Image 1 (cartoon, one colour):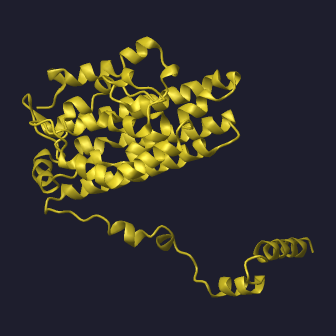
Image 2 (image 1 turned 180 degrees about the vertical axis):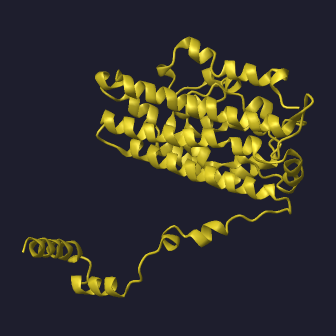
Image 3 (image 1 turned 60 degrees about the vertical axis):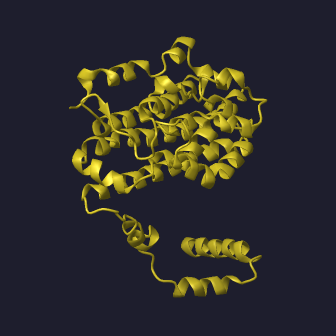
Length: 322
């Protein structure tokens, strides 16, 4: 009898749900009756997913390279998924903030720990050969990575540090965007002009990135933190979580790329150019860029020495793989 009452209650709720759809509940129940059972492979589109690796050469390790970057982009999407929830939240609930930021850190932790696949999981000679078939494509062209930065902090914090003092939150978005730090990393090593890699990226994504920057103006994750009540801003767990996020995103993750670049592109003190022509020695080190999402959460000394100890270790010739 209790079960019958429960079913009746559920049917009433379904009728309420569908009454404004133009169809009665009976029509939807018919659809449910005729619908095929859902399978795992259909739900996640497994066959499509496994068909997305299309190597351009015959070298076996190229498929590893493709899959790892696809996995990375999926993690970037997860990070953006959490960032958008923080930005869209109107409650300014500190527990909600901590939960989402903690999830972001867990995604970065997975990314950072998995990068050994890139550093040690491919044969160097294979990489140096198949990479030539990928020109001028580059991981530099990851639009999601740029979006993560735009959601995290005001655009003036992403201006190249040598020019940052010349700009403020009052500077127009379009002007700030022209001086964003990563553009300096995509200049031709010989001429100083924009590489084709950067020109392709700008043509495709500049309107979208500027639109996002305008949408989150005064409402980035850093802004959301600054607008919290004083008590919430002093929440130790929140502070530590955001500090960790900054270190993960702007020190640990770039340094994993440094490790990969040295593994494959540096040999006997000679550096091979990146596929996009990016000046990776100057572009990747955190201490050279000093990108900090949440500057007030780090001491002046920490900001001055941002990533320095790790980079000193990386540049030590004794630590380079021969």
